Length: 181
Image (cartoon, rainbow, N blue to C red; front, side, top):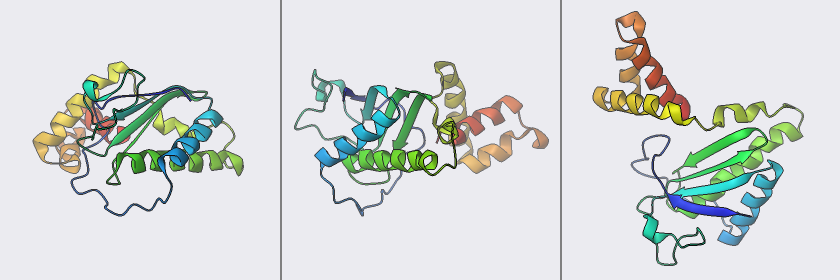
């Protein structure tokens, strides 16, 4: 599997302040990579990128973290091209970045089961996870600013709602952050 790691630039939501310190996985890193590769292969994935809270100097030339590298936060994002279009999954639920990669691999397995059990036939379950285009980054940035300004997502939605005298573009920006999370 062709995977490369790169520094985490933006996380889809605010980092969890207190990650869940129970790790339910008993699998090793090799098993996690096997599961991730298996699920990505089923999706016809190409150009797989795992974003980690590392600096560029902590990533080897082959795209994997250096042996002594320790991410400053356990959050990870796995993004790739697939037969359903570009997809992007991120989590920081667990205290270890490798456990978070496993959580994404298991999540991909669960999404694939939707097709396997005949609930979906055209990959509809992946539509909400499509990577936002580069043009959407300004919208997301504005939404994050509004959330910070109002002290939370709910307050930002209320303050920017057009029915309450808010700006429709600001409301859409906050909604975009919610959808991207």
